Structure formats: structure tokens, C-alpha cells
Image 1 (cartoon, rainbow, N blue to C red):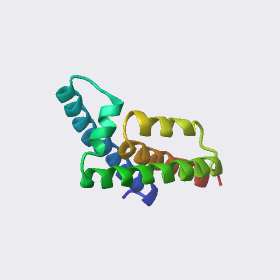
Image 2 (tube, rainbow, N blue to C red; image 1 turned 120 degrees about the vertical axis):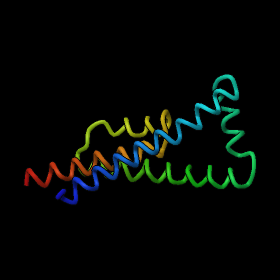
Image 3 (cartoon, helix red, strand yellow; image 1 turned 180 degrees about the vertical axis):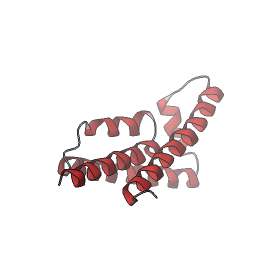
Image 4 (cartoon, rainbow, N blue to C red; image 1 turned 30 degrees about the horizontal axis):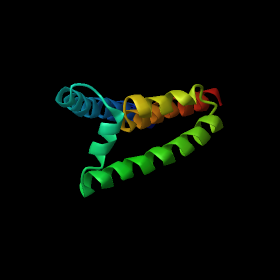
Amino acid sequence: MLNSSKSRQIIYALFALAGVTLTSYFNIQYMLEQGGFSLTHFIHQAYINNASSSLTNDVLVIWAAFIVWSFVEARRLSMARWWVYILLTATVAVAFAVPVFLLMRERRLAEINTDS
């Protein structure tokens, strides 16, 4: 039987896989439809109606809270390369970067508990 830390690591890895797969699919569809990628057009499309505007703002608030929390948490746990997770939010997806951070945080906590 897996311990709870290993179980959480597997769950976070599965969330990261789902996050990169689901968002990449739609990002690729967008680029195929538009014949490329335009950040201004992408942002405009994110606010095209009330439903998409609500979801966009929801993700932006989560993203901002994640940046603050992950910075503090990474420093507290002495996690290296915190900036990589922020880069992943902008270049891949928040739905990928947050579970990856949680996975690496869980690994760091397990490492700290082993050293103690």
C-alpha cells in the first residue's frame, strides 16, 4: 500500500497531466483556427462573453494567489527554482503549473520528513 505522500504525489501528477492535455488541446485548436497565435486576440476571445469573462477572471485571481502563496511556500521549504512554476503558468497553463508545484512541494515535504 502506498503511503499518503506517495498517493498525493500520484494524484498531483495526474492533475498535471490532465491540465497540460486539456489546455493544450484547446490551445492547438485555437492556433489552427486562427492560423497562429496572437496574444491580443487570445485575450479578446477570453472576454468575448460574460461566461468566458467570468472564467478568465476566476483563473486570473487563482493565478495571482498562486504566485504569492507559492513564493512564500517555496521559500519556507527551501525549494529551488521557484520561478520555473511561474514561467509554466504563462507558457503552458495554470492547470499544469499548480499541480506540478504541489507535486514538487509534496516531494520536498517527504524529503524533509526523511531527513528529520
